[in-house]
View 1: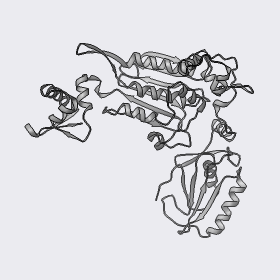
View 2: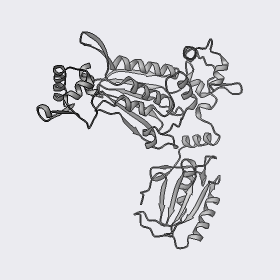
View 3: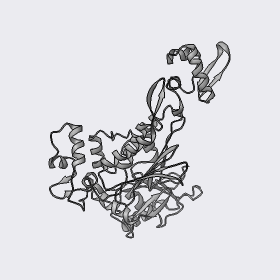
Length: 416
C-alpha cells in the first residue's frame, strides 16, 4: 500500500478534518482521500459506506466555496475513495480559509499564496498585471530584438506583440522587468575565496533589465571560470565549469523565479562549484521527477520566457535540465538539483578533467563506461599511435580515471 503523499491521504473515519485536504486538492493538485484506513495503513473499512458517502457530499457542498469537482467510490474492502480534481475557479476556501498540501500534510495558505490563487482564478499571471511604473524605456531589449530578428526598428507595435504593453492598461509587469530600469528584485553574486567566510567580490545586479542582468552575470562567470592554458605551444581556453550548464541554470533562475516577493536570486561562486538559488519552488502542476526528467515545461513567467526565446537565449521546450546534465556527461562530478517549496537550487561543480591535457581528454572521451578496451581498440578510436597512447593511458591510470586489467596481449582498459 502506498504511503501518504502530496496527492494521497488516508482517514480512518469520516470527520471534517478531511475538508481542508479537499480544499487543498481543488486549489493545487488532483488528489485522493481514502476513508477506512488507519495511520499505520491498516484497512478497517467504513461500517455504513452508502450513508457516509451522502454525508461526505453534504459536508463538501455546505463547507467549501466554490463547489469543487469531486467523485466518490465505494471499494470492495468497504473503504471509500474521494477523488478531487484541481479546479478552475480558485481560490477554493473551507470556512473562509485556503489550504495547500506540504508533502503529506495540509497547511493553510499564506496571504501571498492566496493572492496568487486569485490571479490564477482570473486566468492571470503576476507578469500580466499592470505595472506600477509606467515611465519606461526599452533601448536594451530594442537593440537585442533588432539584432536577433533583423528588424529595421523597434516600436510600440512590437511591445504590444510581445505582451509588454497594451493600449488599455499600459505597461505590464513583464514590460517593467524587461525595461532598461525597474524596481524589481535582481541577482546577488558573491565570489568566495578558500571558504565561505572569505568574500573576494560581491556584485548586486538589480534595477536593470532582465536581459542586462543575464549578460552581466554571464560576464562575471567568464572572468572567473574560463582560463587560458598553453598546450602544445598553443593558447587554449579551458572552462572550469561548463559554460552551457551555467548559461542554462542562469537563464532558468531568471525566467522561472517569482517576482512578487522582495528577494534576490543568489549566485555563490566558490573555487570548486557554483550554487544558483532562485526564489519560488516548482509550480504545483509539475512534480520534482517531471522537472528533473524534463518531461514538459510549465512557465511561471511565460511572457518573459517568450522574449528570452525570441532572443535565442533559451528554448522553452523543457530541455534546460537535460542540457545541464549533457554538459557534464564526461565528468565524474555531476550537477545537483535541490528543490523545495520555496526555492530551486542548482549546484554546478568543477569538471574533474579540467587538469587534463587535450590528448588525455581525447582518449578519455573515446571510452564509454562499463566497456573494456584493448590497446588496439583505443588506437582506432583515438587516432594515437602505440607509444603515445601508452603514455596517455599510464597518466589516466595514475589519476584513477581509467582501470587497467590483465597482462600483455590480454590487457584491457576501462573508464572509471
